[in-house]
Length: 381
Ligand code: GMT
Image 1 (cartoon, helix red, strand yellow):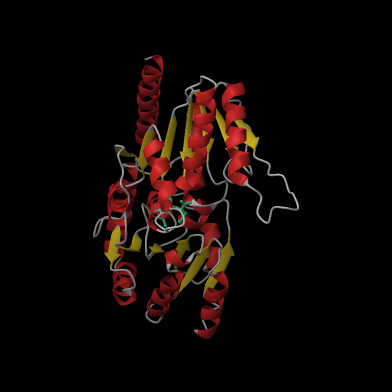
Image 2 (tube, helix red, strand yellow; image 1 turned 45 degrees about the vertical axis):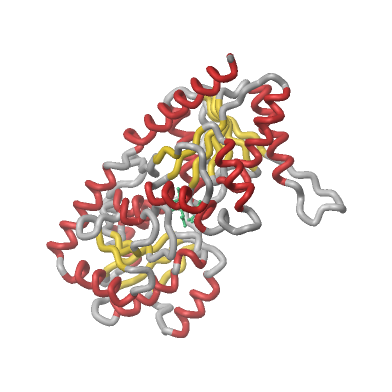
């Protein structure tokens, strides 16, 4: 199939998932056209089946903000027409689902039916999408998509609870590529970070408020009082400055390393003993899954879809949002008991296997075929 993919090209989870899907589909022989304002972060090598179409917005003195939506819609029409796309898959509803509807309507006026699938990722429903300034457009554009997927059962339910949805939503979970995320036993790297054999706790995110990274530091501060350990904070975002101040005030700078955005996250997960993700809201928690694939148990909140990924007592432990005492208690229980730690490492890896790319990708391919057949049949009537 010739598939157009629209996503945010950043390190955010939706962009990562979109890029990984596109690259895996290209390996399976599909022709993939990424359409976005910058080359996606994880799209860093040449592939004969992958094409990238950059969306340029014209600067004009009248605009305080360049009209990206209009430029994207025009580019979608152009790519669909000249590359003869069979299907368009847009990731993150805002603004991609409504822009796809506009492009589809323009193409329809030219006698072309372009099937559109929207994948809902999380904050496009839970945080940004239900804001009154976006909600009517989000609801309309979800209902106007030919196919809709959500990355967890909880996100599907949340979408149905929040909006008046007339479409069937198909749950297709996030997935993991084990050729990249796996235990690699690079102990020389570990020796450089913890020369005295301290335990390593890690957190990966884009440091937005919703991630509650301050809880990661609070948990670490409690654990560190009882056992020698270091904390790796991987990623960057709006909360970083506040977090740095917090580390200074708690006098923890020596033991907490802000590593910024990293391409090879798997190498840092590989040397970690425990992963923390205490989010206020998390539709799935791809970062937790990546840790689990590297055999790292997870301490998380029980928000959103996290209980579908981090299985309490099997892959790590869940606590209520903000309950840093419980999270610290669980972290200490794991780090002090080697037998429990090994048991949870095994549980984390075995659970991650259920989200293997080889099981999840065929679900997308089958759904593409189903939606394509439905739209084509309707167009013939
Ligand atoms: O919140 C992020 O880290 C980014 C956000 C996005 O949409 O870019 O991630 C969401 O999508 C990921 C991929 O489907 C999910 O694994 C994350 O759980 C989800 N984040 C939230 O719901 C907060």
